Length: 101
Image 1 (tube, one colour):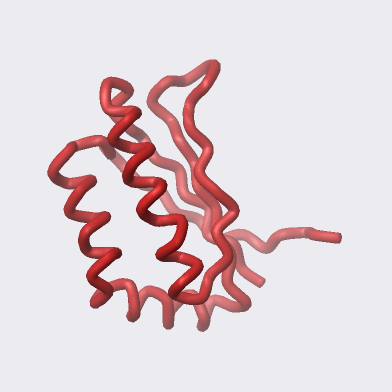
Image 2 (cartoon, rainbow, N blue to C red):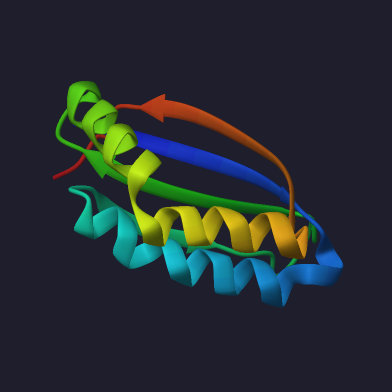
C-alpha cells in the first residue's frame, strides 16, 4: 500500500472555498480506485495549512488513477473550481508507506 500525503498552502480568507474543493474530491478518489482518508483543515495554529491523505494498493495503481483523473470530468471540474476561486496557493505531495493494524 502507498499513501499520498498532500500539504496544501491555502488562502485563509478562502477556507470555505477550499472546503468545497475538498468535498468535491472525496468521492472522486474513491470512484477512481483509491481510499480517501480525508482532508484536515486549519482549526488551531497555522491558518494557511491543510492536509489530505489517500491510499492505493501500489504506486502502479496510483499511476492508473492519475491517468483516469486526467480525463475525468469531475476531477477537471474540481481543478477548475480551485483555479477560479484561488483557494490554493501551493501543493506539496509525498508518498508514504503506512503502518496499520
